[in-house]
Length: 136
Image 1: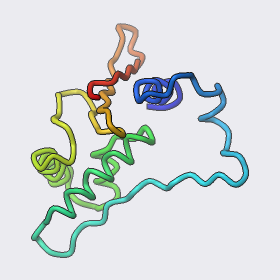
Image 2 (image 1 turned 30 degrees about the vertical axis):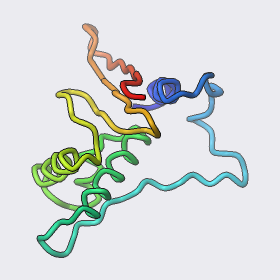
Image 3 (image 1 turned 90 degrees about the horizontal axis):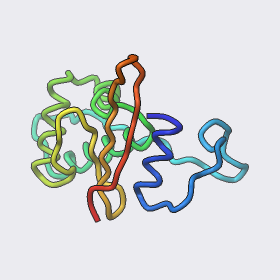
Image 4 (image 1 turned 45 degrees about the vertical axis):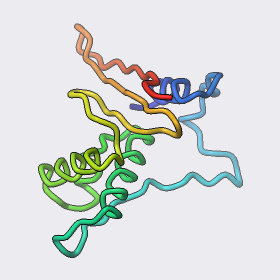
């Protein structure tokens, strides 16, 4: 998700006006620092606690906010197998750090609302995106 998808995400999150058209293509104004994406580190031991699963949710949400595929971003950050990261995300959902999943959708908390972002392919093979608030 880039550009138009981020605009939809912002509108769904409660921003009541569209951002300037060049907001996602030009660097931020002087003095404004963008928060870097939270990158999960693989734990040293095999015992995973609540703090780790909170970090999984944070990394997932951070990747979504930047338009990345969250599971693949965490795989890249940690070097863990895709199936392992999928298990971490499932457990973070079970513990309530991420909302329930729906197949084919990236769902995450954003402030007091949950957002559902869906990418689908049109009959011409182009990817379209939509975002909507599903929580309150």
